[in-house]
Amino acid sequence: MIVATGLLAVVTVANAQTLTATGNLAEASIRHTATLLADGHVLLVKTDGHAMRFDPASSQWSAVLGPATAATDATATRLPDGTVLFAGGSDNSNTALFRAERYNPTTGIWSVSSPMTTARMFHTATLLADGSLLMVGGSPRDASPLLTIASVERFDPRLPELGQPDQICLPEERGIVPRYLAMATLLS
Image (cartoon, rainbow, N blue to C red; front, top):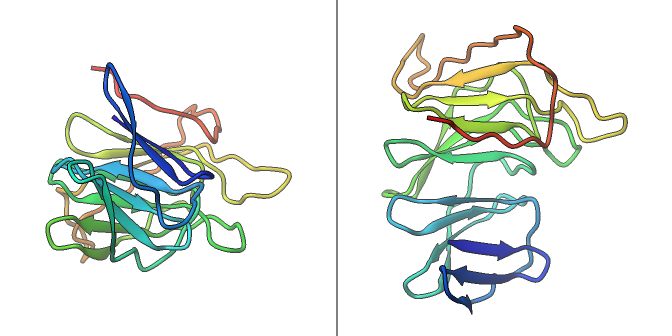
């Protein structure tokens, strides 16, 4: 398990018995994403668009190419093929984004995916058993009063459509209660 504390820029690796302080981030970071990669490294994408990889074997951080669009309050989810989908979030004006990008940890390259049908920040992204990703709720902006989104989108990397090689978004507004800053866990 890895725990990253943003304000102090300290990383602690924990197992069942001990906590061990490791190398600090070069700069403190909050509201970033942290995703466990298939090789055991952790991809951290900061709100300024810079990205880092943490190697738990060496306790070292290394800079990697970041996404084309910087975002706060996005989601970053590892897909079954090992790539990471970085979706939604907000820009510097606190307006939610439609954009989605995929990171290939083998090549270190980001590619732009088809945009979501609804701009979202503060949403959840849950990997489903069939390999698709369900994005739920969120908000269109980070301002008072905070608005919530009552819709669901499904990202399926296996289904190409109309020149959009890896995404089909299906809005489903069937009794969904609007929510943001929620958590979601796949049940069996």
